[in-house]
Image (cartoon, rainbow, N blue to C red; front, side):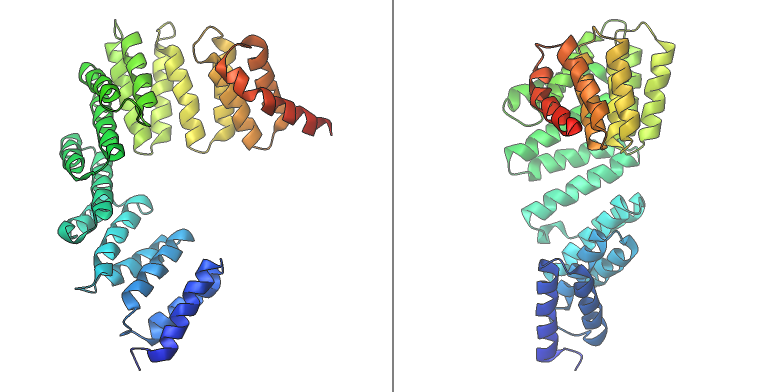
Length: 338
């Protein structure tokens, strides 16, 4: 019986229980058995999405993609829309095939999506187009997203992304105005601190730093699209060529942060330490010592972490960063001593 009947329903129920209890291998084996044995089962679209999710969770993008595309090929069921959306996401985030991802997104009937899925789709589309370097089209999608986002958090995110888009293009005055508008429109928003950081960066380096700010924006774009090597190279070149520029500590702090974000924790810790010791009067110095300590601690090197925290506590005892690491440093010392 291609529909599976009671046996198929029982196995599908067991699959759900196995997945819920962390037995993913069992769940995948049951799922593939059901997929092969019962091609006409009523639950098949749900089964395919579950298989896709499990393959995605286990870092098997090609298998996840195949399951999602098979679900998408089932017309007239809600799972088909979600399958198409998730297939596009695999193309985008795992396979880095942005043209294929956009083709999947274009095939989705947005009217059939929930508000949440529609918002996700527009975010995925904007990210794809941005990675392909089409800033104008990215802005248009963000405008559509602003209309589709029902909550304040979604609108704030769109406003921030549009501000960033201007910065990436080197449109410094326009970006500064948009960041400032965001802080007024969403004073309690979770992205306000990021916007304020950008405002300070642009204002403090506005006189004579236009070209450097444009280069900084280009580096941030490379970081945004996942090219950490390109971002670091651009910022380091800027530092080498302009050793006396006021933007120097901003660039060096960002280099260290990008290295850390890319999973290069040791390099990031070393870069933060170098900034704090080379430029002790920088506004970033206390934070750099703290970030270095946090990275060493996460890397399982408590002695190095204590060294950074102690430097922070000794040189900047009144800083907020010092207050926040004091207890951590004491705990690490006790563990090292024991």
